[in-house]
Length: 220
Image (cartoon, rainbow, N blue to C red; front, top):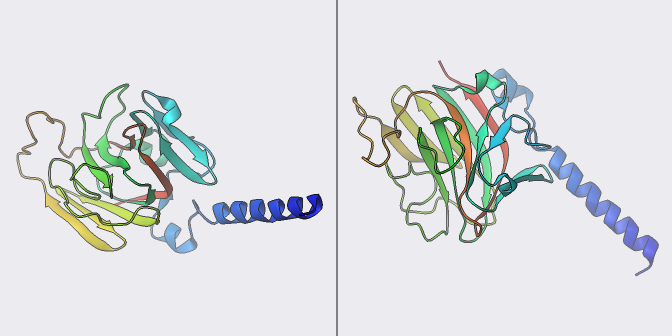
């Protein structure tokens, strides 16, 4: 193949990637009218703060790539002062084989370890852990993979009062109402509703998961 033709082909492919990326991490007029706000700009980690092993998180082609040693990426940006109580959180996710991740809600930044505060919504389709995606980890688990590796899916987490619901591609996975008083496991005393921010989990060096179109809307 001639060099000029190769360069032209590369330019077309590059342009296609940029065009595809440009279509994500944006809000439609209907989204804005419904109160949705973006948490991830698709270009940088602005508004987010990683704990240990910060290299686990990167941005590539409009996607948040999670791949590396254990780390957690906490939202610290301006939306709602990074403090949410009642909300809908929507994320588009793609897992790779044997990957494990998670999305924490009502949590708070901490330098190391698994976050102590809040609930973890599991992200797992084929990892060896039997607790699969969209379950409330160690609180109300889901035993069946809700999606397939290599395919984008949408996960929504809805919190209203004491009730937590999760959905994958519109199908409800979990409907949990926290008892009063809360009764978390003895080794997870912070697993209860209060208010707080969100965090995305980097689980281990063999787990690769990508995220995009991360948005939230506050509920009354």
